[in-house]
Length: 207
Ligand SMILES: C[S@@+](CC[C@H](N)C(=O)[O-])C[C@H]1O[C@@H](n2cnc3c(N)ncnc32)[C@H](O)[C@@H]1O
Image (cartoon, rainbow, N blue to C red; front, side, top):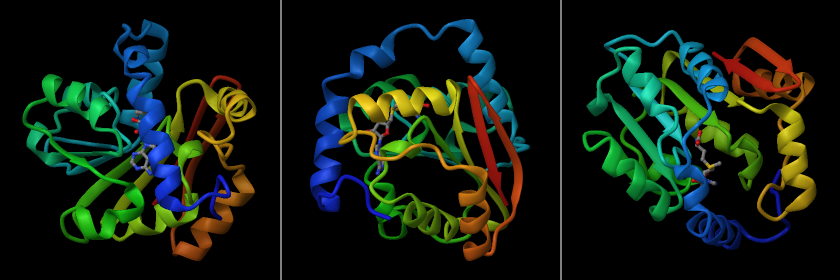
């Protein structure tokens, strides 16, 4: 279902404008407690030194540091983001990662080949999308047959709801309930392999 009531391109323009003017927030040091949660998110996909990873809406690359700790090679990571100003920060930090300035809804045309990735992450971005199910569909096409999609937020569903309530144009959706994920998984021929919904932590793994 589409989000803001506006077209996809207008929604994308609004996202870019918002994140261009909020880059500074993402340059602040991340507290250890949150780093422990983003580490747990990265670990949930069972990555190793041979993994190919897609970081959807990578922003300034908050998850990439954990992928590298898990042995993933920088050149085997693709980070996609709509906002070039966010990507510029990530490019400086991780020069060998392949960063693509694009909408994940255009994934099939702008990102590599199908059957490429072992894991795709949507961290702290899933409520911002124009069409959540379409984003999953497009991402699934890029996965290997045993690949997984992780939808996560290190501050949980409550935090995303607060963002949605204060700025529904930028965050048109909440994080999905288990029933919704089960329905999408069945429609996409996937399985909900893990679901954690705690007050300050959300993680869903589709395989
Ligand atoms: C909260 S920020 C950063 C999230 C990042 N994954 C992290 O863990 O820090 C959300 C990011 O989502 C990006 N974004 C929003 N919608 C997008 C879309 N449809 N495709 C690609 N990037 C998108 C924004 O440009 C922004 O950089």
